[in-house]
Image (cartoon, rainbow, N blue to C red; front, top):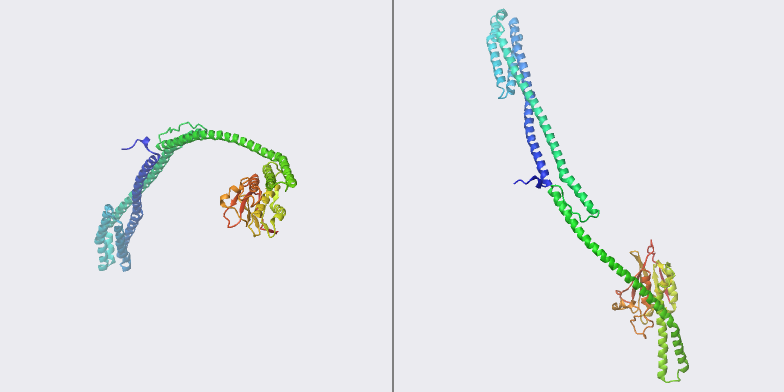
Length: 529
């Protein structure tokens, strides 16, 4: 069953319109082809048949007149050369009759009949007039022939000429009829072209109206509704006010998308409120944590600072006891005094280290450009005594960074100092410092050939007061790498232990690069102690 027009899709309507126009144009094309064929045939009749036959008829008439003139001239003079026009006329007559017969078609009955009449009357004239007159000249002489000419009339030859004229009239009728038919077919071709142009024009107009009614207006209306939603009215339902199934389906899809966006937007709003609440809680906790850290740092500083005086008194009096009463009491008493002095001294070292740790980032001199090559030269000078005989400290391509020079110096003192401390027995220590620019950060590596650090302690070594060895094996409080970590993080970097090295320890840390920084040319400086 044919669907209702309102249920037709835009494609179906356009196909139907173009198909109807195509059928009409196809029918006009067939009619135009038939008309053009007829027109060509009619033009061919004029050019290839009527005009040549008419010209051949004129030539035939001339040939007959030449025959009549030749016979009369021969009858008057009796000379044989005067009979030549007669003989030539006979040949020309045969030739032109054959030409005319070659142009005739079955439907040219009138012309064919007239031609037969011309042939018959011409033959009758020759039998009745021309041939007897020639025989008279040949048998009786020109005088007798001349008397016969004067005694005869021109009725037979006039009938021949009338027959030729009748044939010419029929040929002219054929020409006029073909010309009229060609003119009519030309007019029909013009009418067909006009009809085709009208059909194309009407198809274009209907197509424009169809696109305006089913595309332009619905899309503009749909766009207006979408703009209202884009302006913030997410609860507005999108509907199609036109009967196009395509646009109705599009409107439903857009409205489905609107509902999905509105649903997700509601979820986003709820999530945003939750995130804002969480951010407020985090901000509050951060402020509380910052205040707590500040209080803890202040407490650590005050505690370590205020403990210095009583601890110095304890250490001083323990040392006085050791000097004054050493040997005067039993061996156990001397051992107790020694333990007390050693504990007081170690307590002083712990407090000093804790005081230094708490001062990082709290007491600042401001960031400046720091040339790490100069820093390493200063560090080498400070550690020259600890390095010992045969030690080697080298650095390659160190950059200039932004930071606090005292803290960066302390950073390298602790790293290189650990490398010198944890050396292998009977092996001269070798420490190498290198730097490479990666992702706007300087990656700096400090590597040695010492006893190294096990992978399981990669994170523990940076915790404050964490020791990996017994106190009697290596001195120190275990705060050195914790200070390193705090200095690096204070400068906006990070620090980690590289466990994938065959021997020794390899510690990496990063420092932000200055704007426009480039890797310096490789220049290695070696210091042997």
